Length: 202
Image (cartoon, rainbow, N blue to C red; front, side):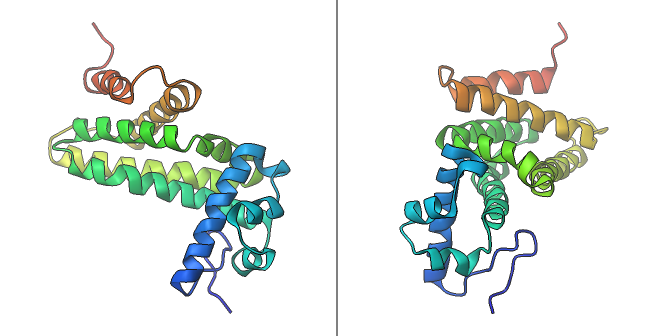
């Protein structure tokens, strides 16, 4: 019997081939749910997009709900893995926040389905929805507090600051990553970062 991921009820693959199949199913689920939504999307639609048999789906996921939960967790991890290295390479925390937003805007433009999937998670799986945002805020809070210890940002940083930064990034990603691409990610990140560094006081 395959080990299960306690967060998603998904069964972990034991071989490289199994991992490729599971990856193909998750990518196909992103396309299926991103295009049709959770309720209209189907397991048969996912397996058709993945080019695999129905039995292969049930090797790793018991239900449509299970693959959706796994997908929310997977998309959160994809964002983290795409954004994280650029944040880590920045010379200071203010620059790191600019790089974080810039790379998130790039990710959102390449994966527009993320917004529909995460938004639907609020109604399909409240725990996965909350976890997506709470784990993101936890990462931001930890890096801001570390930066405060280094003297790179104000020393009264709290979780409220982290939620504010994440909220800004989420809605800028929606506006300039999904709805409209007329403004360059570099310029959006520059303006937002200037506000973050200096506020909006005259």
